[in-house]
Length: 358
Image (cartoon, one colour):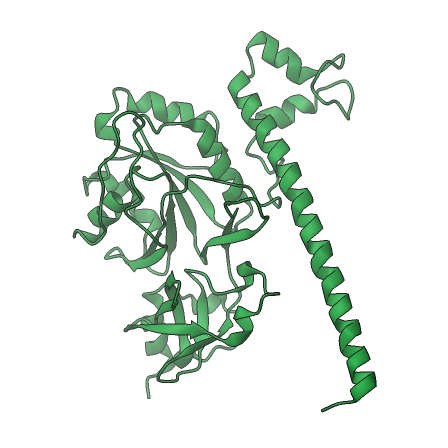
């Protein structure tokens, strides 16, 4: 029988930290979700990877998709020849977004991650406004955002691009400019990739996520695609989220390019990302200033003087409007679920009263 220290060492290779577990865990049945497909999950226990199905309770229609296993989750399986996932261990972090489409749903991107590497190319893909949106999604996840500007070898002035990003992100958000094809250039990312650490890559298609992953691995494991010249966008060469063990000791989750980045309604605009606007709003004459045409509005004064970039204000206003709409959708959904729960409980009681226990 394998000793507990040996099991702990084995599991550290998939990012497990025994010291952070708040409950006793059967290490022999512990594994991590490394991929999710339409027909099930792929798990890794530190020695081997194997397919597994979710327990039937995860498939019930009334279960929030966020409460189902996600890539990065540590789970307990039943140990059968055709294993089933029985339990999801408490998550230390969870990165969410609003799912694409008209219907309101939250979608889990990755669980139990330490850093979210936001990749953006220093070419036609460069857009600081999109970085603001990514960081807003990351802020409440429990993970730390890190901005990685790829294709630094093609940028005429990489230092200026780094400065432009640093001007719009919180002071504690690291910003790196790298050449994803150059292993030496990626050494600046190694502090995020050590043993028992997990990172997730996010960014548009064609930004270099697969190229960066291949360089870190030292092999062509991930397919890469050509990038369109007119908009610097690529095809989806990564088609599903997958966790990869790195030679640096950590784990990396690669994701498909995200064309749509919808908020969930749970984000907080006053969490520090727009600290400059928060500081200006605090100087307005009226506490409920809408920053329109009210007298003594410090935000309008900063816009008129050029102290506040109109594009940054427009980004803030757009995110605030979307956040309000998504929060309303979330509240409506939660009310419907609560009402359905009450109705189902009442129906169950009536059936019990009429037919008794069976």
